Length: 217
Length: 184
Length: 204
Image 1 (tube, chains in turn cyan, blue, brown):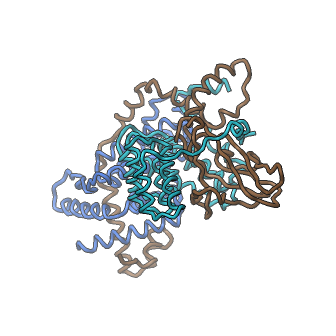
Image 2 (image 1 turned 90 degrees about the horizontal axis):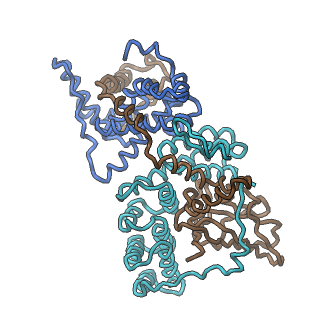
Image 3 (image 1 turned 90 degrees about the vertical axis):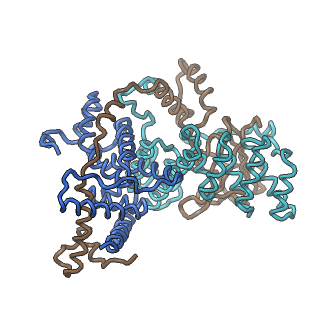
């Protein structure tokens, strides 16, 4: 391990060892070459590769046929690329791998790209993930997409940042569950801004019981 | 193409040299592949300047990731893929700004004879027809009919399945013929 | 857009000889080949060799190697390597600073920390229940749920990086179930839906 830390190839080749090692023995042979190729292309394109490796491992675990696995990985690569384009168009510094993954994950939930772009553009100082997921949460419960975006943007503007935006979505959904119409739910939450309940924190007992996953073991 | 091209070693050998420390040997790969890559990127992006950017970026990326290339003999399809992806990124960025894909006129021809003039006009027509295609169909048509890749090589470049690529090429041919027919 | 006689495509794809076509179809093939020929023959734009080689000769920016090192340290395998005690303290200090900035996974960087995820499900009669997701490399057996009092309610509490995580329950090693209590679902690209969980940092 020490040697790995010290290595510096003349071309600065990636130290991460490639996807093949992680796919071997799990992903069907017939899919490995194609998936590896997609991963390398993404790598050369400065796109995050971990989501692609995970998609292949997921397909293997679910016993998907090799062609389907390759298709899913290619589709996800396209989603990452689309997420990056969206972030670039919104302006600002070049997006990080984390931001790209985050936006792609939110868009896999079905947010139309123009809507996602609207959110990212309206909130340039926000990490994109929570805002996008908050709108997706609302859309998933039948709220009109534009109204959902308006609420989240308004919430951010009164100082609710990051994950607190998810609480805004939760509050609107709770209103719905209490019998309000979609329009009334949004109006009610909007009136209450910035006063939106937070979820309960985990108890010390829960934190003590919590285990870390070790997939390599 | 240079008459000395045959005397130069194949891609796999050049790559071995580069990885052994001979950075300048990458120039051989650049000069060997740049014409095709530039031609492809120019048709994809409709602009020689944007194409130069996409190809330069792609080649620099290829250099940086050269050690990760599994099969050095497949450098050509690999670098085409990198450049095809750069083109897609450029197109994605551009569509928001509403830039027309018809920026580039036909490449000026040094000879001014009548036959040449007709060729230039025909080329302009074909180029205009290309811009009417979607990016995927344009890419498929260019790779197949201009860059001369096999469907297998195209699959390696685009990551798409062969039946999908065939369909795109077939539709591209039909669309192109339609546009060409209207101007006869 | 009219469809062409499929034999035209077959000739152009190299599956049929040109001579097998009647004259008017041959003319169409030739028209397309002439169009492609014009594109091939057009003068090549000025080369990029000078520009590319000049860029490669420039020394890489100072941060780039450190960034790569940082990325390697935060890759999943970094936290599962067995470290020898002699230099593990130094590495642990670096890791502690760095692992708080997750840079991979399906939905990282909602917060720069880790949080608690509680998985609960009602599976009466089950012999085993696992949670699988990218945080287990989609392997079973990494996060088994437990039903200590045998009332059919299985649970586990797990430390996960903050952010969005897709997951599924696997019951008795073979039944894949999207957590009915999840409230958020995502198409998995394989014809099913994964549940989606958003983990928040413990501090907030």
